[in-house]
Image (cartoon, rainbow, N blue to C red; front, side):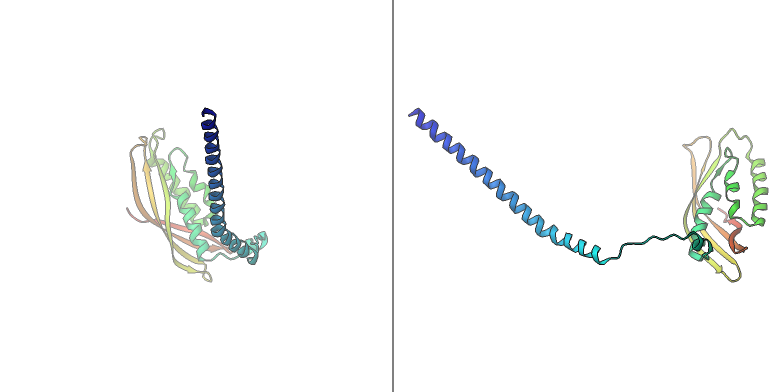
Length: 198
């Protein structure tokens, strides 16, 4: 009798294992079928789209780019980058930001920059006590662009952060700046910069 019960138990256990294995196999097959039904058409669509689309071509011709005339959108983007560097300086960096930007300045602006650095150094006081301003360009608007006359004006909205020796104390404010451009030997140069009063 004991042997009979053991044999029955073995058969039951084997039946349960076979049923469980078969159920899981069917479930995985169904899942794969559903996944293939959903993903397959998407894959086919993406493959078909890629086949029909021409491969992107990136050709950079240095000579062509050098001779390309800047338009007002180019000047707007240049203004954003110029203003961020122009408006960010500290008394411990020796106001190098102005020197770095001279390549983009007209002769008139370069002369103004040299005089302004002298004034800043005079008013800075003790250089061992840190003072600096960081400027972020938020947006730019073309107010005037006359390629034939060689003049343009871009208004840039900025957010500025003023910091002192105590870095935990900062003064954040918004301030606009207007840039005047002139064309010098077929190149656009910043001829003047005017910060609006806070």
